Length: 144
Image 1 (cartoon, rainbow, N blue to C red):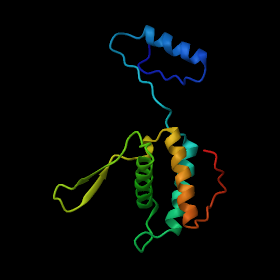
Image 2 (cartoon, helix red, strand yellow; image 1 turned 90 degrees about the vertical axis):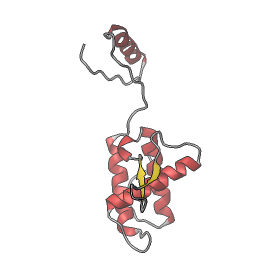
Image 3 (cartoon, one colour; image 1 turned 135 degrees about the vertical axis):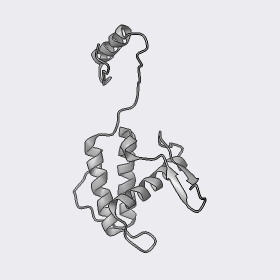
Image 4 (cartoon, rainbow, N blue to C red; image 1 turned 120 degrees about the vertical axis):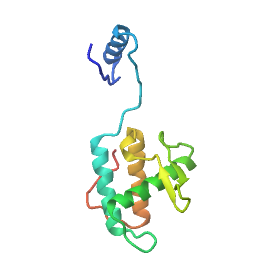
C-alpha cells in the first residue's frame, strides 16, 4: 500500500474504495476526513479582485500593495465571519510583540481556506468592492 491515498467522497463507489483502503491499512496508519480545500480557480479569482481593490481603495490615507491589502482584507473577512457566528476553521489571534510595542496577527492564511470559506471570501470581496465603487478588471460572475 502506498503511504498516501486521497479519496473524494463524491459517490458510493468512492466511499466503498475509501472504506476498503481503511480496512486494509497497516497498524499505525492515520485517516483524515476533511472538507475540500479551496480550488485554484477560486484563488485566481480572489487574487485578481484583491489586486483591483489595492489599485483603487485607500486605507488610512494611502494605497497599499496587493500583499498588504490581502492581509487587511482577510483580517476584515475573518472578523465578519466571527461576528456572523461562523468563524474560519483556522481563525486568527492577535498578540503583542516580544517587546510589547506592536501588535502581531497570527493564524489566518488564505492558503488554508476550505472551498466554502474561499467562496464566502469572494462574496465578501464583491460586497467590499461594491461599497467602495471598485471597478473589476475581470468580468467575474458570482459563481464560486
